[in-house]
Structures are given as structure tokens and as C-alpha cells.
Length: 222
Image (tube, rainbow, N blue to C red; front, side, top):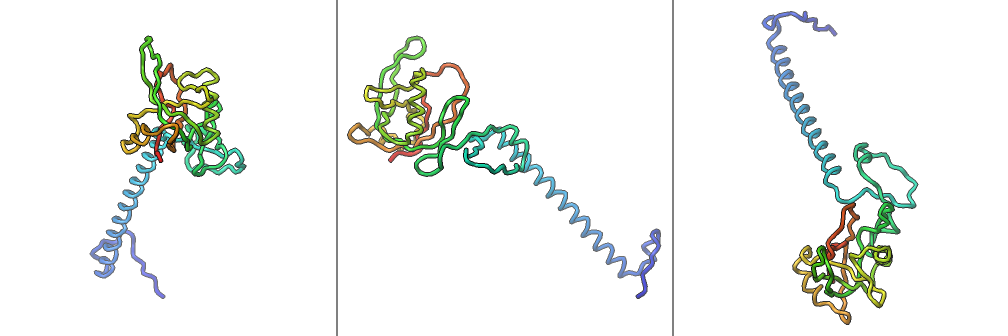
């Protein structure tokens, strides 16, 4: 088969008309595809940068690693690993709890169910001011979380307290609870306790807290 030998600097007018149309068509197509590829790469690169930044700056949950895990999976983003602290998982994650251990603060945090009833009590706040705190008396639930909350009281943290029955009296923030749950909480009693799904947040390093500060968020009431 004969090869088509066309000098590189041969003017377009010397090319056959079909060949000129063929080259023009594919040159235009190549330019369009190149533009699409560049635009797509820029868009995906922008999304990736925004996503990485959001994970590092806005994530409220830590990366967790089970204590019995021996597999080290490579990260897709070394920057996230370098800027995220890991916490060991306590036991399993299921409807009975999903808790993690913060050795630095000797704290257990995460999700857990509790059982108890609503109460209020008087307390002194900053400047010797009298305040009334909302709380739940915890009569049952996740043993791991209850034990850690009691340990904090016994080590001197006075935000929560332990009553004469040995039950922890746990401050709650009614203003942060959905309206549909408030009536269920406030209508609970020792003879008619409620079931609470709570999240104990990762403790923050900060100064003295208000006397009625709550360490938990109530996310559901049954």
C-alpha cells in the first residue's frame, strides 16, 4: 500500500479537499476534548481540595481505630492522618453503645443508651449565684459510660453529682433538645422512667464551666 507523503510545510490549498475537511474536523474535535479534559480536571481538583479542607476543619468526630485491630490501612490523604487524632473503640458498635476512649482526659465518649428520670436541683454558680439545673437521675443503661461519668465525679469534677443511692445525677440542656422530646423528659419520674439515647461529646480543654453545663446531648427519648 502506498503511503501518503505530505510535506509538513505544504500549503492547505495543495491538499485534496477531502483531506482538508478530514483534518479540520478532527482538529476541532481534539480541541473540544482537550478543553473538556482540562475543565473536568480543574473541577475535580477543586472539589477534592474543598472536601479535604472540610474534613480537617469541620469534622466533629475523630478517626477511630479498634483496639483489637492489627491492620493498618493506607490513607488516601496523608494530610488528614497528620491532622486527626485517633481514639480506640471500646467493645463493639451497636444499639447498646458505640464508645471510644480518650486517654488524655480519662474520658469515655460517643453514643450510648441510658435510663432514668427528670429532676431539678439548686446549685451555686459563679459569683455565688443561686441557679436551678435540669438533670436526669440515671438508673440504668450503658455501664461503661455510667462508670466513667461517676469516675469524673469521684475525681473531683463537680458539674454532675452522685446521689445517696449511688446514682449519677447528670445535667442536661433542655434548650438543646427537640421539642417533641421535652415533654417526655420532664414527665418522666422514678416510678415511670424514660429511655434516653445520648451522645457524650469529646471533652474540650477549657477553663471553669458553668454549674449547669451538660456533658451529653439527648438525641432520642422513648
